[in-house]
Length: 117
Image (cartoon, rainbow, N blue to C red):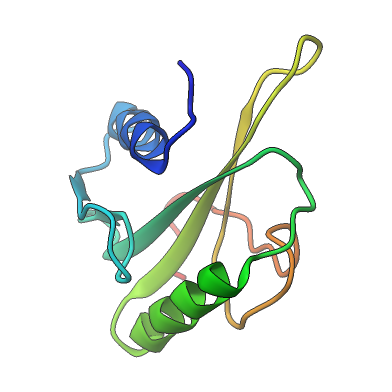
């Protein structure tokens, strides 16, 4: 699947989560996240990245600031799809941000099934 737009990445992530028995709502493209995991009360922002250390743009930092304001009410998670190549398949990585950082890979908190965040 070609993932040149965020919508395709959201659809892939939604299907991936649903295959793991999650109930996921698509919130569309807005400042409050892209997906909602109803099972765990988590707002998910889906991103794609060509490089595993790509810095956040000014717009992405503003969006993350909006999402972090929701942390008082909901858990906020980022699902990043790192593009693969001929030797490595693409991979999904999730983390729960607690502040705005310049890179997607920083401040990673791994997901542990069955554990509240």
